[in-house]
Length: 159
Image (tube, rainbow, N blue to C red; front, side):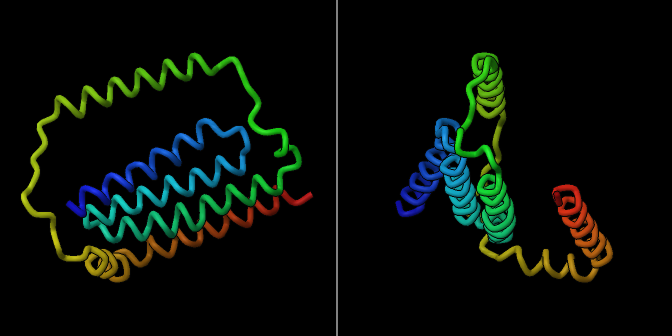
């Protein structure tokens, strides 16, 4: 009962945030809607006992990507004009409806093997042990690559 209520509330939060991104003309409010959608997805990961994915969702998407988008919007000179309308709304809606129909067909025609109980053991310990013992070098190389990308973006944006 509680899990069903929590799922319903988190799904509603995710969908309302996604609809806010679609329909708000103000870019800042659309970015805030994106943050709400990301938080809802993180909550759904918690309900699925995927604690590492929930933490990564909050840290990476809510904490980094969304904040970066909000800073980008705030620092853009022409952001007060909002989202301009264009001629691609109808073809975009048709493409989204076709994608939705294809995904609905796949979800309804797939035979899902559902276990009775979700795993109760946390996944973070096993992932952290693998990350910091077996995959230390690729992890550090990825952080250096991200640092170089950030420095490159700063150099390109610098007037």
